[in-house]
Image 1 (tube, rainbow, N blue to C red):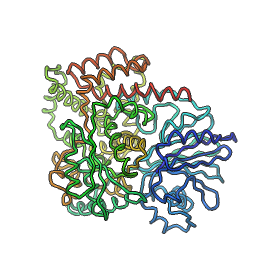
Image 2: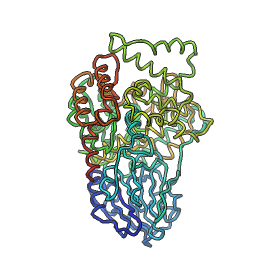
Image 3: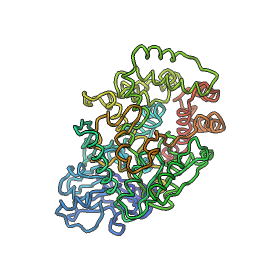
Image 4: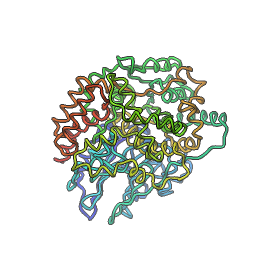
Length: 628
């Protein structure tokens, strides 16, 4: 695990090693154990290493025996020992980095589909003077790049591009629109017009002349398994043990995040069956029992005989840590669960270098409430929908709690009006209604909004999708390819790597993903229960109340926060950062939204959280970009 960065300046213009050094310094937290650089002529790259596999021999950059190829690599390859058996290569180390290099020498770009792991890779071909960048299938590891001034620079994190001489960084209005809609920027983009993200399952090549060219080497495909329910349960159980055991490959101790939910509990239950010592588990809790899962996590830990630690976090102190949380993302990022993830990573990093997490289970096995809602929408009689639609015109009531429930139902009804699962996904993920978005955008900014409407985004990202997918499968495909990499995995990667902690995600093992996508939806959702087949598979391993628990996740009392002191703090950040006067959003309408939330008439807490995170980013990282 590490961070990587580099610059292909091209045109014979020499790359200054000091620029590479500065790139690596900006991602020091991703790999405090080691650093390596290669600079030759108009190309150079480097890395920061968190030493986990072959601690002594895994130094990077690493070169092929004939000197043709050089590689830097961020991630872990769990089947690298098996791949070595297929390769006639004079291995000098036990590092998975060298296994990738050997595979590339033998199979070229065919190696990427063979890798079981998470990765962002850069390979330099001295003979053809071609740089190849590659990202893993589901986007567990990040990779930004920027094509400017005749060359291309890349990095694991955005801030490691901002020091490249001759490069400019201006706000991308389309990306800003996406952020204010969803709380994050969608795949392929960044908050800056000149910076892109390499999409999951893609590779990019750039030679000594001509533009960079990206292509896909993998895409998720839903199948329809013919196995019976019992056969699928038994196969899942066996595959789950195998994939978790593979993710334990390390020369350091591996622990686990444990929330007490079904996904993290399934991870730890499998670990206890393949490890010869107690599993080291970590949980955070909150003083407010309405949002605290620690008792459930402690129950699982006792049941499985884990060596468990719980850390209680006072979320009222979030204002103190929020600037640090935002800074680690490099661009505005507004998932509130980043706060507890930050604390949990900080806590676990004091004891271990590596943890396993249960991320990905909701996306693969339809575990979100919105999956169940989407599944049931088509079964609601049209007369009942028409009657319920009257709620769209219902004015606010004196009860804050009733207003919030009505608001959620109104959103569900608006979402139901869209024609397919892709459009309903984008509609459901929007933080504000279309009418309110039209009001809140400044007229000079509103012209870009048409590009981020649900129908337009559906065409952009899924225009060539399999026409035979059901609406639920379309919705789930959007979860897997949009919100999983851009929200869930981004949240975990930056919050954990800010504390030099590697988080591994067994649910997203490539072969496991391919197999799980073929499980029929009817075995993933049963009645009002998501992740049905996963629950059945781990049922013999866990207490029944844990197996049957509904999803909770990291829930924070955002609505209450913004109705009190935190709302005043957010309002001050929004105005004090200059964001209110930037010409993107209407100053007066935003102030109305703050006031309406405080009154209890509507819950705008997610959108208000995005405002404070944008303001914090604007006060910090954007000023850094201007002076880089």
